[in-house]
Length: 399
Image (cartoon, rainbow, N blue to C red; front, side):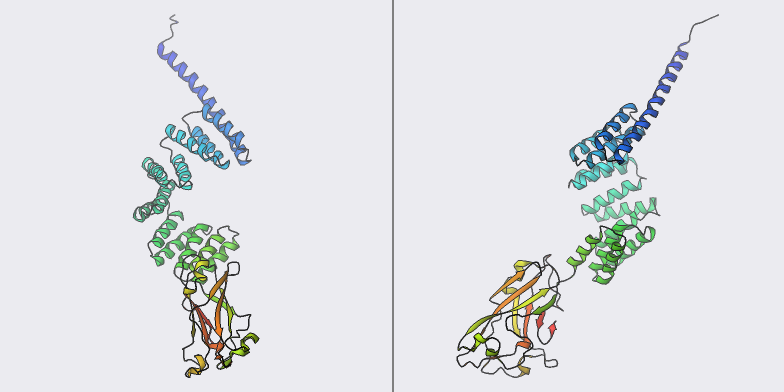
């Protein structure tokens, strides 16, 4: 009997042994990976990182190892160790260059760090290695949109819709592109499509609300704020702040507290405004408090050149100075610009200070009800006044 062991049998036995050993190591790696995930979910990130590193070492070049590297990077991010996370993903990509989830994760970090070109390179590589991956396409589209390449962004989002027609992401991206291009009607249509697919897509509510605000449909935008509030979304404030910025500033109300009574009409004696004005040739500072509807630019508000004080000229139901008659010889002098303006940023209130002078005969007259205070400056976001509510007079109110 020939007891000689043939070489191919030895090779088969060796391969079987190695295979069995690696199978056991792969199984052990899976167990250790699970432990790491438990630590990660319990926010024990140092223990999680150690477990993930062991899992990757036990079963290199496998799905478990790639997942382990991804979790290591995410653990570092949870610890706000951005540099370590970047190095982890860079190392993982060198080992697993064709794994799109690793490139997407690294690209997302680059985006947060303001490294747009580096992020774009990762997203483009992810799409190159897996062109049918909708997540890679979406990330690439968002990166193109950030860098201002709306044409390429649209192409990527159309691919997302093709790959995942039941996903809201592609429609949302197309809505973003349309809004940035100024095609607001199309943007509304696309974003409504996104919300029909996914009623819980909070970013789509925000983008739709911004679009309505851009269109001047503030009530519709505000309805979406209320929807986000009902959903207890932290994105409610994002949309609310945008609406506040988008609205043109208005004068909300006006009042005086030092004798300039805007209910008094034509031929009011200046001496009746304040006891100090009963002296010949006396001049006194009076003031009007103007309350704005939103945060204003303090420098703009306090600049007297942005204010105009004038006599009403609109002949509408008596809404004209001195009933439309010629100014009497006793008419008090009113300068067209305030002496100075103070601004309370906490209450958005401007105090407009202006001079009124008595004549030598103590017979000066004025028509306080038809003095117009008009502001033509800017709000805190650089937006000009709403011309339907940029002036005040006692007769017309806010106009």
